[in-house]
Image (spheres, rainbow, N blue to C red):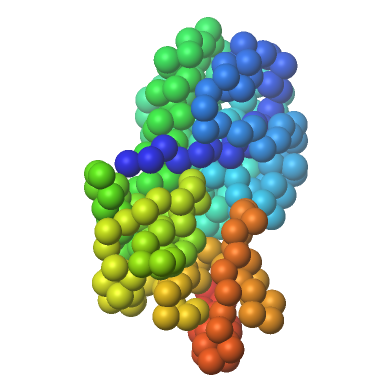
Length: 243
């Protein structure tokens, strides 16, 4: 299974952990989305920047209580982002378990230990996606079988009898027909924009005229005139349901 790209928000005084920052910038599929210092900035970013999928919470004496309280408040509001607590103190396992923190990293840091923490965040993201999709994996069959959650897929299209699965990580060929994908994903908010293109409504950012734009990517799809009214209506119903 492919490796999820982490878009990390670092919260707290990262200057205390310069080695950690250097390690993070050297690890593939890790993007540092931003660094914030206060609880207010932390909460605003998590609420208004849905592309953030992982957090490093730097524990320091002056701000730690406010940051942890903000973390707990976000969880209560349903904004649960896999979080690693960075600390130079030894904290009890019970305390960490009660917080729901994915992992704790204590200074000094090694590259392998940091990678292990990030893998735990990726696994947490995968578990959440798998649960939210009703426990469904979507197979992509070429020279090998790869499994994706519906959340990972932008669209599936057939071009010159070759089926392409466009994911958040890139494009793959598949030997499974688009008709079979349509039946398999019928109850998971996938709709046909024309007979050879199946889109994931969860990944749609907007529909403008006959063009569908997807979240966090330049990828687009086309709606044929005969499908435009039906697809637009389905998207509106989907958005109202989510709201």
